[in-house]
Length: 291
Image (cartoon, rainbow, N blue to C red; front, side, top):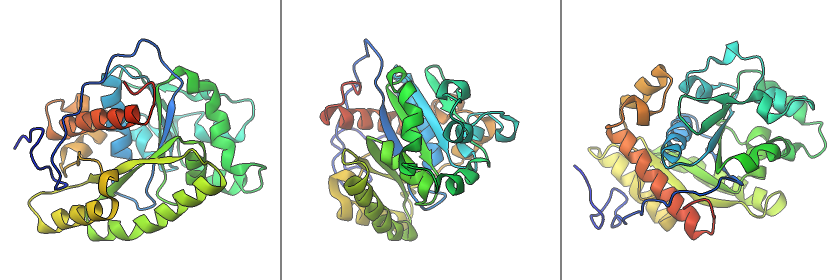
């Protein structure tokens, strides 16, 4: 059932009407967004790919950073991680490698990728001995920040040094949260980590919002969990929620975003709505490239 602005949405609040963002007349510098949750399987990679593609449809230039050694983001965009010569790992560990050397164009116009593979798991161990080890990723991304409007970092499911690197260079963090009981338990730890990063490494870091994923309105359990997330975090919770659907895994197998794989699907329209909601939040926060 299609919900209209003013209707009560899944989060129990009236749905606002999110404006269509204004076209951009120029690009950059990029807002860096870490998509982060130490729990696995909550929709981080799905959100990075599909929010990125939906923002690209709005004329934004996107760079997606696969910062998970499992390389799921790269696979989801049709790139086989074991076939790649240079990845984010080389960017972090080799001084003569630039971000532009590692970039891949994706099938989505205006959206590029810094891919990853299992090599990245070694970076965490090697970075421990580096001076300024929390800022290595930020240093490597500096050269491409002027070229993009938004850089989305798909973090690994842990709160280790790689995730700290992403949070240390990000302007904001977006937290996908599966609508099930155990998802709530890890949020306190994640918030504590974000708080420490804000205090010690990156005072400008803000939370864009929490995104309910894998929502199924037919089950009381997911409705109750989403309700308790809203009770705990209020307006920090996005109005848009992402429903559970088999179309997301199908799109991953095809190596493309849901917005092109099944453009008319509910999943595609949810991520388009999320893109408008995110851009509106960024605009209100004073981000000139939000629209």
